[in-house]
Length: 313
Length: 245
Image (cartoon, chains in turn green, yellow):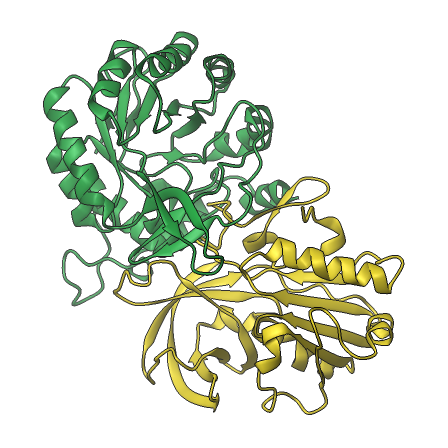
């Protein structure tokens, strides 16, 4: 089942299945190898990367919410040069397209990062993450900086604020895909310190808000593919996004809570024929039913464990 | 790392504040070493959303003994979804003779699994309870563990002797501000020992781990060289190698 998730053009991106992990939830392809069969995913969206290295946020970073979580990590990363040096060999070996999520810091940094990523064979697309409070002019500058320097598809991840106008600007500046959305920001009191912490909110409750945005975008801008991202916690949630007009979906924090469900959703939407235990219902699937583990070890022609050990050093 | 199921086979209240759960687990989880933990979730519910970090206090065959607060309700036969093993085993120095375990304003539960291992290797163990950790009932611990009740803040009787006598120190603190609390511990040890050697004073980090696998980077610590993740490189870190400011 092949799905084109970019606008028609020289460098279209076609996925085998319309499900991928969201930025910030799946690492750089170096984790989850024991839990999830990467061949069943449509693509891998990396953790956010910036042109220059960033440190982790000070203080409280995680606040538990009722049926959700608030996160304030500060988007730590080694900076684009070190990230590419560290992971390019691994990305070249992974059996799925790699989409690098780039933090939109300044137009100059975005321009330089896009140029670097354009040179990397193992990178298939760029996802540009816009800040929540970005102005329309700044957004235009950032997106132009990316699309002007990259032949590869530039996907633009929109915030939940001013989404429609930012979407229009993204289309005008040459974005190949709209990713709706970065989950909204909120504030919660940390029960341990008593401090009010601001960060992004994740959980099933996000789905109705973002589903509405996806439907609005799909209706208003039918010319550009949309990827729905936010609150997906079951195959039905993912199918709801597709019904609303999304071409593909991104699964965020569900991967941390129930890693197997990411593969389950990918198989379900990917139309894979699943191996069923005798007596199991047609829509049931569990990793122990199939040959996920066996196939991963048999098919690779390289020593994955050695490569991962090297990355950890 | 595996995702598997575990069944609670026994629930036993050990004192008014804590209970022990006997958890029947998958074979690979029986290889759990001191310092490692599990991320556990009750099936079929999004509340609580994140997995809870469970620290076994001992291993008996195919079962793990887990210590949990008594106000949490568990039933025999309850099936839990388990992700593990989380973290790396605590690295003990060679030729250990004496280990000091410290709990500062928190229960010493994450350190308890070291006790049978250390005692089995003929290492003597002293446990210092500081702040609100003093209310932790130690009746169920091995009677050979010397328990010292702390005095005000980070003080206890014969502190200089205890600090000098220990070959290795493991500290667990309240997670409200681990870095600040560990810094206080380091400062106190610097006052008692002119030089803190490497691989001597270890902080055991027990803050919330959203993913447990190194994906979210919410547990990142700044080290002198670079950075490390509590979930994959920890939970025990040499405090002299961390940037605690």
